[in-house]
Length: 189
Image (cartoon, rainbow, N blue to C red; front, side):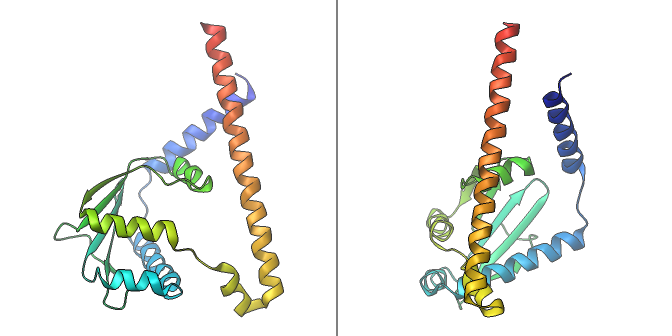
């Protein structure tokens, strides 16, 4: 077995092990609460987004991935609050189709949206899609409050360069694996 096949086998086994693990309930709960805090922080910087969400007050969105459910509702302030996933069906349910967390991360790193199945309120789905497409976190502004404008600008610039390098690395590995796969198929065929 060549080294690339060994790496692929190791990656496959690690992913299977991760998929087989169920995170503790307290960890999921704490993670979801942090996501809500982050979403509200970002929304507070976007008055247009908050205004659009005010029109959706009381509507609920649920994201489902494997056994994890994350439900939020839109508040009269144009923010989000976390709800229990038990009870009534959400107005909009988004199912992440990809089971592999590695593939989801890869898609996000490449600037793509993960494949989802949508059930429920079409108008609400359009609003959520608008938010995803138009609302961005201004990391530089937040950092500048902590460490000054120049340090914040440089930090964000370095982070962007690292993200670009990581995207290029992922693309190179994908291309290499595809070439190897095609070469192996041609030699077997």
